[in-house]
Length: 294
Image 1 (tube, rainbow, N blue to C red):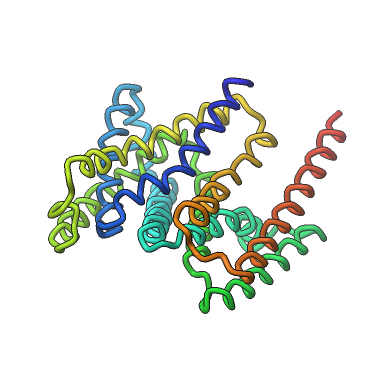
Image 2 (cartoon, rainbow, N blue to C red):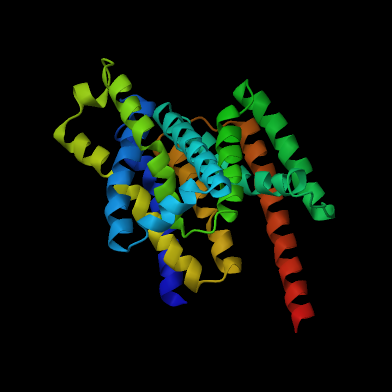
């Protein structure tokens, strides 16, 4: 339990601090960086799955009609999520990325209603109402719909829904996704690499080290989190996920001095209240379920 908790906290802190990592590469085209991230992740994952003799399982899943489409769809969604996040960090929208990951659990709940036909209780209706109100207020504050946050939240929630339907370990599933994306990533690297501000044209030695390391920073937190998920109850691990957007929020506000006016504070406050209501309701329902079992 203790080692699992340390692993979980470590994984979430790593994910939160990735903003600093990408900020050091902010001068390059974000889509070129995503191409490099996919390429580097594949180069890290391929030896691992071969060493652990999991390649045949992954290829079998990719060839399966039902599983293959899910893996392919997951690869598209993770690309959208990564691209939105890296683009936002490069263009000084770190606080908006925090908003997106704060909103993700609320989007997941909405998907449960829209896709799985689940019914909302009173607390869940309150959280959705608060989220809608927050988006309306933030739209006024930003002067536009917070589309980056919505794109991040929506893609991450859909990705999570698909991952629940893929009976593979997290590393195996990600490996399958990267195999689908490997050739498109090379095309992306080549086409984006011809621009005057590309990494291929301008990266220093240190920046090339960072680019090469994008595979490691993708795989290691995921691997550590997988260990944590096996040793720590989800009721403990779940609330820790909010540490990621909290770190991003603080970085955007305190380190990168992004604007945080009254409307944004109100909008974020409504999201935080919605998450508190959702967490309380989830904890109560879990307690009732345990009581029924015993």
